Length: 286
Image 1 (tube, rainbow, N blue to C red):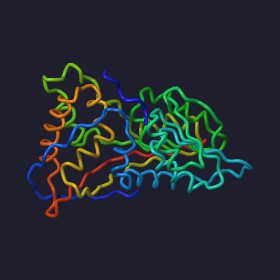
Image 2 (cartoon, rainbow, N blue to C red; image 1 turned 30 degrees about the horizontal axis):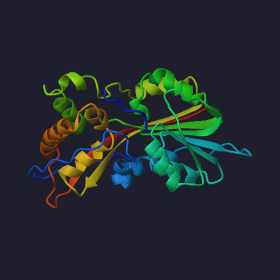
Image 3 (cartoon, rainbow, N blue to C red; image 1 turned 180 degrees about the vertical axis):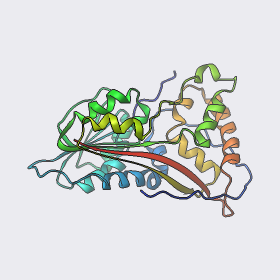
Image 4 (spheres, one colour; image 1 turned 60 degrees about the horizontal axis):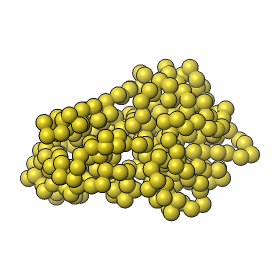
């Protein structure tokens, strides 16, 4: 995963939920990127990358194919990529040593390296996969062309980014972050730069022969109710907020956030919460 600030496809129809009582707040967490936290919802987090990799065009015939997973996390996305291209040389990159350790343990047959993908450039690769990682990085108008430049002729850049900043989970993060107890330290922490298909298509069309862009909303049933929703985001979007707070403040932040999440995502009759999660997909072939 990228560095967080230091202390500093088919469409699915919406489903209405039944009300439920607020749940107890989740426990505080270590603010560093942690593989164990991230993979608590591995099946749900991996489904989008399966859809993404399945949409990559067939590779040109070459004697030796090379594919790279940037922001590989604990290796779940790398595993999907390697299964699609079983004879390719596979490389995984991540800025978190903990994630790289988990990926190496999971897939010892492949090479994994700690790297800062904000400045990384190498190649040529037949596939550059970036699953749920580029949303953490700025300057997409230069980042995406730089990644396309890492492709061999006929190679593909495959990107999936969460497109959920307007969802209640993110809106509530911003509202809780505005609390006077920590507002001065959390101002500007959440990622707010976001682009839609009308930004990426013309940017990449000038560089690529084929562009495929789509948006899908997944509806993840989380059996753990409200605490499960909080646990999900503790493995991703909450991390920059929690990284700037001490342990007591993290407990207070999570307690208030949990209360608000219980109102925004009421549980169904069996206690399950349905978490809508929109994602944007781009496959650009050079």
